[in-house]
Length: 130
Image (cartoon, rainbow, N blue to C red; front, side, top):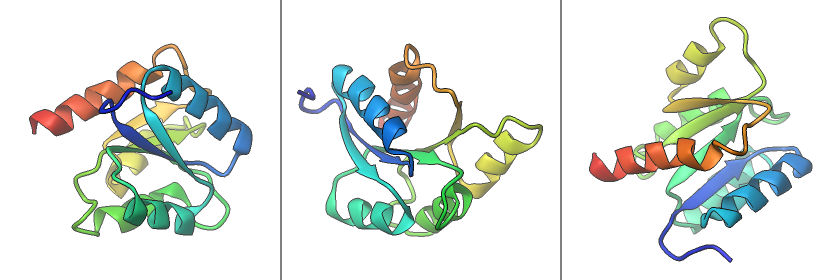
């Protein structure tokens, strides 16, 4: 059961197995995890939940993570929520493309589940401390 107050993460990912793994890992670290399988679902979840950080899969079928990130960052209400790109795209320029789209950071797939919570915590602390 997530520890109250540790933070709520929105994980936007079309792959159910990936969502299940990350939810289990983050729940064990005390985070609440809200899941969205596609862009429209992610926007709905943002409107319904109090989200502290977004993990954004880049390669999704309906709208890629770059486009969705840019869309979220243009919405004043959500612009300050840290967004971390989660992608297997590791070619030269992919990290920069994520940052240009508005992502605050970049996590490479396959995700290192031993370091995931620490990576997230760095961005949550940065957001809290301004």
